[in-house]
View 1 (cartoon, protein in one colour):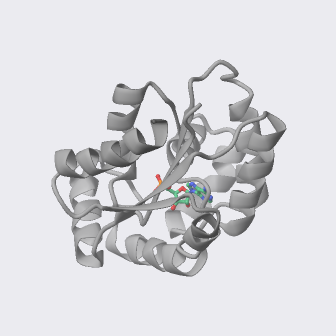
View 2 (cartoon, protein in one colour):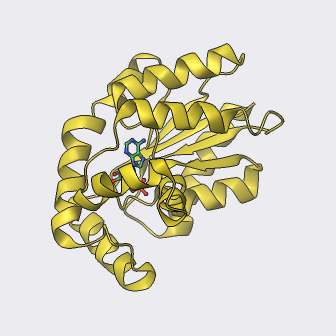
Length: 191
Ligand code: AMP
């Protein structure tokens, strides 16, 4: 089973590249951001709590996210593999994911870290606001999200580096070129 974490700052192309990975490798996509946005739309208890955090660009508390994830993993027992997009975002989420997977005799195969310069991240998110109208893609919230990434999420890549699972991918280029780098890494893994 191929279980991939797609890792990187907001706007680094995780969602876009995930879609391409799913098409090529038939993995099941789990995007915590997409799931939370659905919960908000459906006005569930979790959605009502998450809404405030998301609007401010802060992380939704770990335990809520971890419980949500455990529930989702059990919904697709026959998946060929997972792509985790936007999760984990803290060390405790990373540790919880490892525990959840090992309880199911699974493990993370690789973490793909998309590297994109900050100016481009901001430009991409502002453009996405025009196209998709995501309310957290405004300049103030974007700056909070980038700060949260630097202070709470980025260091998680060390955790995976120590396990020998971290692969860096240049994410500044065209979508297809970035995807080509990703497939080179994944193809090496699957051999
Ligand atoms: P994303 O679509 O991945 O950029 O996520 C949008 C927002 O959802 C983030 O800014 C957080 O507020 C929240 N969120 C998504 N995934 C997580 C997570 N793994 N942990 C905490 N908050 C999250």
